[in-house]
Length: 254
Ligand SMILES: CN(C)C(=N)NCCC[C@H](N)C(=O)O
Image (cartoon, rainbow, N blue to C red):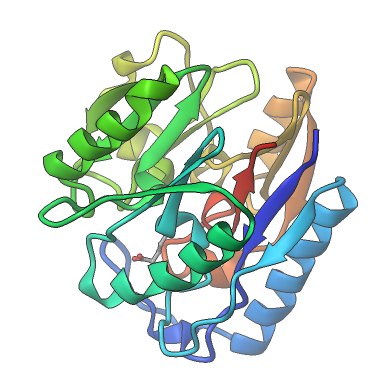
């Protein structure tokens, strides 16, 4: 399979990014730029072609490209981010996906939905219903994905910015989470609490390889004990902005 991922270079205004659940600490822009280059290099080293969405220098959070679109097979559902500051980010993602030939749908007002709230595994799409994503956004996503056979499940979210700030899924479908910010682990039939907050975010690179933050060595060991190969990257500057490894890319199918 052709493995491609969207990425978006950080804005020079990155340090002004939105914060909801954590206090602001200084962001080192030069270090953030090096970490972004290393993140992109890690994807490429694992066989992923990276496609850059044109930068949005006036949008501090634009590096978190995951929030601008939900991909499902050949369909790109452009989001309508819950934070007004982030709404202008979507246009650049739309242009790239149109040029690549994806079918386009969109979340419309009054719906809001951030890609970081959407966790997909094997035909089920869990969507965090919380600060950034509302019921209308979830209903619209469900309508767009129903013809593709996906079933959308709303998951109440009160303790984290996005659903994928709290949980992600391993290749076998086990949902991994940092208990302190998971509202109800019983939503998932297979749930594994992890010992470090940054350990709960994984990007699936293939059936046995995950990309994760290097700030979670005990969780890394746990994943390796389960037979996974782990690629770890430093994303400290993005973690200061409530970001994580998932937010920095969008994997494309086909
Ligand atoms: C899964 N996560 C966490 C994301 N997809 N996005 C993070 C966005 C962070 C940004 N400062 C904001 O507040 O929007």
